[in-house]
Length: 332
Image (cartoon, rainbow, N blue to C red; front, side):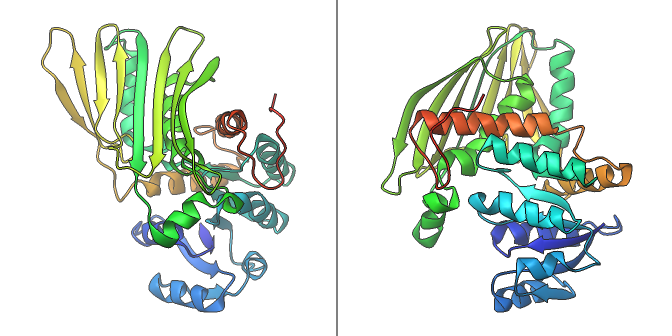
């Protein structure tokens, strides 16, 4: 598929680098657009992209572009995805998809109406390890799951810190990295929590969250706890505890290894390495769905994406954390 890239930040560089390492998989970078022509030109030269544009509008008018990877700040995803769909482009949008459920619903509906594909780029959803993990759980190897815990934290400084916390850009730890935690929980549970409790949250001088500890309760009695922070280093590990054993992931985001512990048996380390860096799987999924004429993925579904958007919105509303254009009204 012929790709255009909308914006030229770090995550766009990772996407471009991944495409260029996918060899003979028929994925091709044909154009990039930025708000600044110098940035677009430098990006194009770095990643061997033939055309570059000084605006997003010019990029989506390129008739050769079939699909666009949207890599702008969180609060711009909605309008940028709409722009792509209005010009007949399939869309893979960097997470978080949008900042509220209404926007997410509109984009999926718009894609269906125009017979175009759209998906949130929650790339960990497609990692090979999670297919293996699901198989282990479904076989009852660790018994009934009772508790899940996960954590993720890093330190941002300087201009990067400003960007991560800027409320005008949809900043804060929950939207930036907490979506990985909440996405991981949904991968394992496959359902919405019945109850969400904030055990601790810290809102910083930017008016956004730099730390939160959340507790979830599900309909089957399962509980979960999630910690997400930008301000301290926390290993991205997770544990799934069952009645017969547990599964430990040293890194649930870059998930290539898990340790299976079953009562009465020696622990087993299971490796599921990725082909490149993990991004290749969401790219393959987007191309597969486009070829099949799908408007959304049947693996990471619109329902899953919207549910995560709604969950994060409701959590932020409970903290009285509102971005421009939002009102403090809980989603249904």
